[in-house]
Length: 629
Image (cartoon, rainbow, N blue to C red):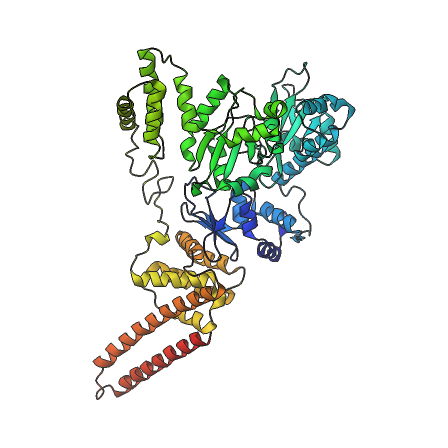
């Protein structure tokens, strides 16, 4: 199999800005000198602990410990191989890769890339077909809902011909195999083993990832003789996972990040109508209920830990909409942002609302949403007859746990008062019910390890050495100084003179873990400061020390935003470590000199005295060097 040359791998890594790549998945904001931070894409968190260092080309999460470079990030986020990650980034920057053992990429080098290419080719085919004579019903459907050809182009809408193999023939002609078409979900197979186009005689919307690559399709039935479901989506594939994708997110992500707001609607045409009306933060799920994975995706983009964010759900006012609202409410506490519900008074969805009352009505609907808690409580109250005592008590029992679960404790008293008013009950009675509901909340598990394996044991029960993290280090002044000096050296080696670097690496470290990292730096001294240096440091340390190296590499530097302040800090912390080490050595020499008898050991006494003089001269030289810089 062809291999990418090592030099090209390094060139692509060096020419790629990791901030741009991570920014397609995570909203990043400044976290100090040379550092960006955001919500970790690898675990669910409420406050950001995921840091990116663009100049170093690395990321690290101080919460879950995930770290790596731009290749690692793509491998883990998109489940691609290392070769696929390199090829994708090379294509992004227009870099021509060189392949060893044959000089050209293998034709089957990337199944994922082939699936994406097949979907892209299918999208182009569907869009061309929308202008055909056969697609008149599709164009009529769009026109009746207020969408002109420009809108169809903007959202990539197309038409799948009413044919068993029109798409298959087109893509086979472009070089795709039947196995690839089946793997992409574009072709289905019946019980007799015959293959046919999955989408036939339908209006088709492309479903894309945040970078704009088409992962699958959603298709609406147009013909009365079509016995399939009203909406048909791409099945689960290696690249399309319905629980993780949101229609319109590629178009909405930048405004979601800028406005810290997202509007979740129920259909593809609702997304189109909302965007055309100016609500450019609208997205929709694709054939599944809004769930935990969708929340993770949105939280990373909207930066909702700022407490400024709003998540607005738009539901139909029917029973299905009520159930959808309750499912969304069940996961509401996963957001830090405030959650709301927007339902038009006449029950119209955004598409019909735009048609009936104009685009301003869509904006007004989103501008004045109802708080999620109020909506859910009122939904619960509607299930009971409040004219009877039994009905009011039953409604209180259902509503009290909702009020008790309100995250913002300052809101609870207000909802107690409102609930009392809606029920027509004494406020103290409602207050007691809410307190009782809070006490009966299921306690957390008493499992001290949270269901995980015991410390020191691997997944199969074998003994495993514990990893070393910054939080495991002692918090005494000496260890903190050693930690800060190593972090500065790892992140900004070019700001130190060679003599200063030598002095730092020659210093004696009191902490054994930090000394291990120092030894790895010494072992890679020849590559220090190059683009491939940090990976070499990581290769030198034992695997259990990799988290510590990653955290030192990504740790925020406590300096101002200016280059001069950063330089001053790096040099001062290095100088402080060296002077501390020189002081320690001086104390050791003085102690040994006092124990040496000048008459019986004159030569030993003279050598110690000379070493003291040399030590003092070295201290003066280093101070002079620091002042010159």
